[in-house]
Image (spheres, rainbow, N blue to C red):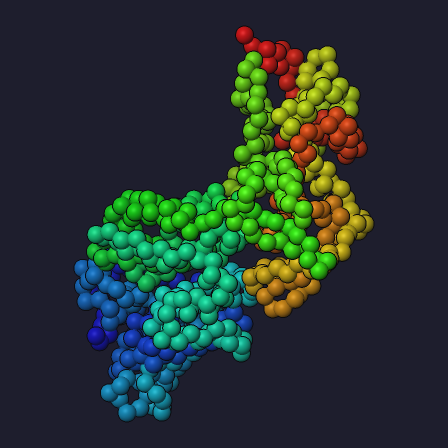
Length: 626
């Protein structure tokens, strides 16, 4: 189809006022044009995260010599004739805005040749004007060079993020193109180094192994769900593979890489109970649907799509994917055994001992450990209900019930209106300065422990309920932060270094805070271009319960962008697993209270998540009600 200007009526209905925001958006539009040109080979090369140079070449149909200037005119496209064509369109582009927007903010060189031409045509454009045009010898297809992005709009350059971040999102974009188009050979080169290369004869499986690795594919579960309107297929990770972010989640609708929070939530919910909390599954899911049942013209970047029968699609996925996952999931126990003086961990399927929450040692004896989590339960007297304890003055202070789940304090996506945890601590301390009649925690009498999770203290007028787990976390944080400030943290050398894979922007953040990590007791160095080696850990954090995933979770919190280091440190402590013995003794209770007293002598200084005050009258109503 030849390139033509759209009618004013069509422009008004589909125009998105598309603006080039970053190198990612340039590459997305140009690669989509290459795919629409029926190319079977596409090469993408970038320098300085695409800020300096982007080169995209293909062996597609090319552009006619007399249509090149028109191709860079706004709202000129070969994909649509009239607006109604949008309801049957299967191409990536259709608005005719991309080339014009790109040429307006960069220096563009294009070489193109169609199959019915004996030569190619070269054009040089700046600010949407053709400054040079001549004939060149070349193969069929199109090559576009984009240089000096935003050279004439310097203000927009200031909004670009670091090279590592821009590289990371571009790499993810290229992965999505390769996954969705197995019939195309993709080659992606970054700063002179080849990142990946696929073959047009590859299957989806071949491309997954090429882009990720064979171990990744081994941990994928195939899915195939159909009904009269939708065909859903692809892969989802099992309970042995998960990540600390959503970087390995790919959703495609009719081959287009899209974002749909509802579908994502359904998939994550299906694996919620069989992977660690705070972790995310990987998936590569394709949805095929009649173009008449979707609207792709709802966002300038076309990454969001509206489904006419959305509930039907969501129910189809929700009703089937859970069964598929559990049919391919096995409950595994971790067995630790000695082998050549090295402690190995292996999976044992269907153990003969059915004891819950246990670790099996080399003698295969079961050691029951109480872990503080949402599933913790205990038998209680019929004289009072557990819930009643948490209803008293809930508007004044965090209730004990709110602290029963550690994960409620790990904020993956904090809301803007919430104060940071570290900020709340400082505010609490400032507010406590002018409080009269201050009373120390150690001035209360120890009565007992409740549900093996709380310590009950009292004087003549009121009771104190102390959350053991959060108190331990606070002690670790204060001691670790003090050691960090004074550069006096005790550290322990790991028997075997822990290798952690990082994304490009995480690696960039690691290099920025490496000295802070060292002051914290975490000695780490770059292992290769995609990973780091952790060689020491603070003694406060390195115990028998610490494993690679614990370290990964804690380090990830320190690598969060745009947060102060102290706040990320507190988040890291929240990721540390805390285990309690089956019976928390009075001696342990007194020791914990003494440690808290050394940190802050006033109850007012302690976090509300740690201490809960209850008057004598309130306590009697709860525990001795009729």
